[in-house]
Image (cartoon, rainbow, N blue to C red; front, side, top):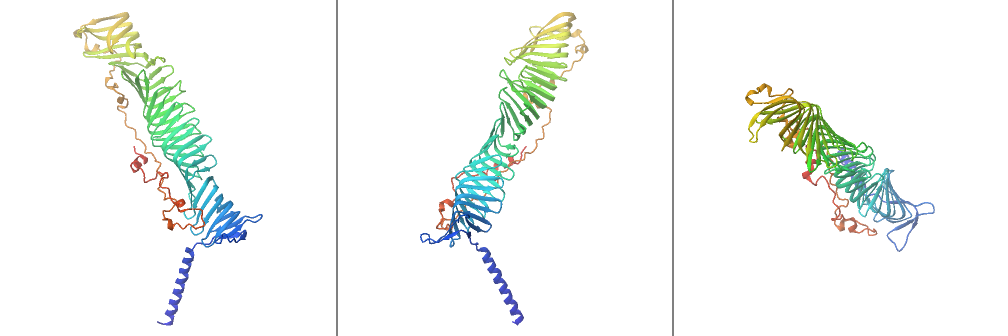
Length: 576
């Protein structure tokens, strides 16, 4: 080997030794240093250097970016470990300050422990607890003996808490309570971001306020702007109204809520329900707007009345609700149904109006006119009167043809919710297939009168009485022409009759439901304490901590995470 090669190898080996030495030094922890204080060496504590504050200056300690002040410090140089007593203050940069009566810090593991009126401050929140563990390697703090966090608007308490310094996030577990001047949150798991004031609720949770109560099993709440988004069995209680939906949005300042997919608004005072797939509720205006297969259900005298329209709007105080249904409105009751362009119903007055091309069926009777009114007795909640204004037309199908009555105005009277009397007033005209007691056709009656009164039995025409009859007679069927058996304005719409509540949506397309943006569970965090055997915990002999103190409690509250409830992930992603 020539000299040139030998020199090159020598330089290379020297360089490698320098790099290896640097790596070893980088891996070795820096020493905790005491930079001010009165030094005392005591025979009763041979392993420690005791530093005590001087008249106007506390003991000052530094280590890898943290600074510590205290009234007295026991410095164990061999273990690179310090115990701090009295008015302890620890800072990390300019973002975090911890104060306590007592603290320990291990320079080898960069692990801190504080007890006695512990307060951890960061720019937006203040954490208070009795005992706090802080791992600088993980940049996480942890308490399990109860703690309180105060931000600009709210106070949060829990049995267990964890602080993630890098993301400014708190994870509160077990008996979590958020107290705000306007509301109170109760849950068992809540993630809180101190920079934004955003809170995420997991598991059964309630938000109770003066004007509303909220329940959900998955939720988001902006604590600084009083806005929220809730899922999983979510509901909002507004005094006498309760709103359910796959997802609920809430704005406390505006007293506004909206709901999407599978919505139900229950009015407990008026014993009614409104359903649909999109709703808006304005509490201050006592207004509910609902669309996408919207239907209102009201129970009257043990029978349900269903009202459907493309859009339903309900306004008014609890003692005076007004319902308006717009476009393709329909109504159904066990013995009655109807259709119109729009419907108006006033619960206080008991009046329901059907407007624009209305039609009503009672049993086999079809009634049409320019406007149809249903009047209920507000005390008994039973149907009282049916009124048809302008161009009133009553049709009932007979095996031989159609019984028909027309006039300017129709008034129907109910007994025990059953239509039994109909009066046709002004310019009344009738075509009626008269039958004997054996149901045999006797003839066809075509008459005109000022007024006609019809009685019904089991929803079938039983008798017709003419008042001030002008003209008319009973024609044998063979002598009455086919083209004369239909009155002017006759339109039979029996195929449109609603035979069940399902017919409320007959012929209407299914709405396209939006996919719901879910609130995913948080990722599964590693345990705060590493699961090491007792002999590997590296606790200095002088520490007040015991191996059991640095162990995770197997019986502690287990947070929900993205590894739990996998069967529910699809729903959270927003199934239709």
